[in-house]
Image (cartoon, rainbow, N blue to C red; front, side, top):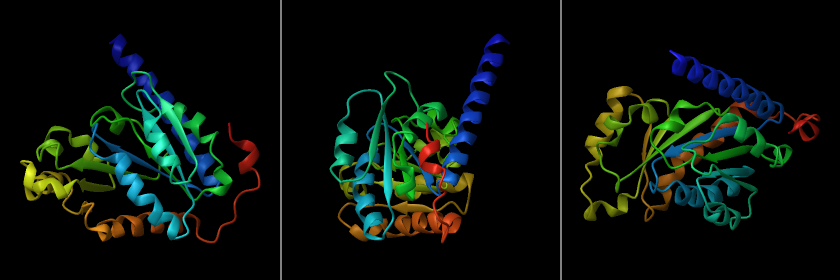
Length: 233
């Protein structure tokens, strides 16, 4: 019983911080999207391909990089010349809303339309914690196995979009795309699923369009709040 009380308290504190993050982002007319998936599924590579397309479309992007150790992923994203904050959890298996709150305070939110949060590589814990995002993307790679949606259902249930990556490796791995998609469709028959292949550069177009629409739907034509710059913490 004591463990349940502690867990309930932790989740409640996280949810409160998440609502504060959402309010801050709304005030700044900025949308956050939480990108989740297992270690090595290709989240950073996905961002490297996605961000230039978004910036070419006029979307001002910032990134929060979550990892256990090293700044390698942040360095890769910084090479794209977008603002990036590296969060090191030092063993923590997911980002929390309070940690993201600190990271948001280090980003120039008045100058950003979209914040992409790359969560820690873990198919379990991140899906349980709201960070204040307005959208979620779950990443599944062909190298992981087509049964992962059945084994880690919350990750795929909670996502607004599922991206299946590394499909250029299909000839070298045992991965049935149709089977993986069937597991996902079992949760939600209408769930958007995107097949991404590094060789086919236009495979990212539907995701780019969705993110542009997500930003436009919430803040199209709205001016940045004058309090946004001074209120970040």
